[in-house]
Image 1: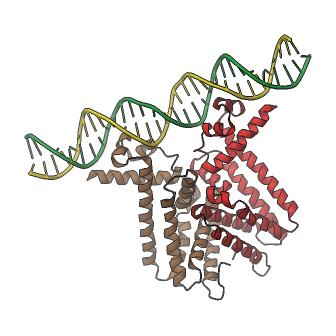
Image 2: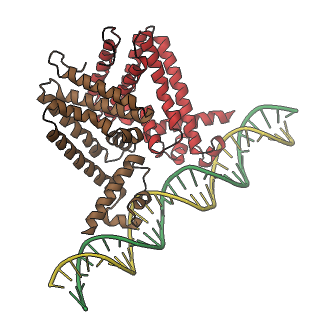
Image 3: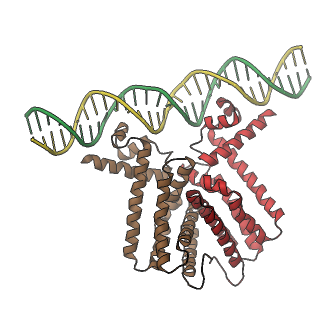
Length: 194
Length: 194
DNA sequence: GACTTATTAGGTCAATCGTCCTAATTGGAG
DNA sequence: CTCCAATTAGGACGATTGACCTAATAAGTC
């Protein structure tokens, strides 16, 4: 059963390298060097590079699902759960400033490559969107899905500019603005996205 | 002087291809096919692929500067100029849904490649940021640069999600939300980013 | 029209890419 | 211990990459 471990190591290294350097720019040689494995050995575990990408996306889907479940556990109220989402920008602040958002940058790259895995990559967005919408719905908001996409939109915009300018103050300021927007959005008298 | 025309054609084709398929994924063969030119001939006009990228960024800086000047001309008030910025999301809607934002996606890619042209690419953001800040300053806002970055952030977030979901309704909704935010931001009694 | 420069065409280069194949090695089952 | 399957190591493949070189051509200039 050593094979399964190797496969996991490959997917883990590929995940990290795809995030840091992009999918197209990461070669088998790069992954092989990271895992300390022979190059040809990849094809015992994966038939092609695209198959590694599939596995990486599957891994991210699993880990994201687990993260959202953990947020559900750790936060009793929908409002505090939304804050957990906002705080992710601070938790991963350094990585985001160095490499951008793993979800957004992968989806954008696969779109440009016209890669068939674009759909599965966008499914990562779906996880966050549906989870966020669930929180807004629990808070009695009128348009939970639109509000979820709005939060997702802001997090993506923050990630892109954080990566471009690498300014922690900007991230902190926009995180606070997100919190303010949430508070305003869940106040009944103000209906939609202000 | 045919040489200058050829160079312009090369840069124009490279600009489009870099946008549509990304910088790393676009080969000399791709550009050559687009311009109908011999591959080896590139090196008369450019010493390397990186030099083509420099020229593409320079071209984008020029064209963006011209666009902003045109917005200044066409719009008498700072408020209407801000709307011109928002409308860009609709004007380029189809391209954004297909390829994302040319500025954001290039900056993100060059960041991952650790390419030296990342700085010049981010300078494209500077043009928009400074121009937006000028409008907020003219409107007597207290933090024009932060507000400029906020608008830039929103446009980037919209571009990423528009590219991911390809949903025109989402873009239209968020454009309207941007306009509402601007109106609230330039109302004196409400200070900063709400 | 001769001459010189600017421009282009076409071919070659080593390096690297993803892919594939086969022999060696490992490790558990009988 | 033996044997068989699982796993790994290592090299070779054709294709493509960015880069470079040189000869042919076009375009002015005198």
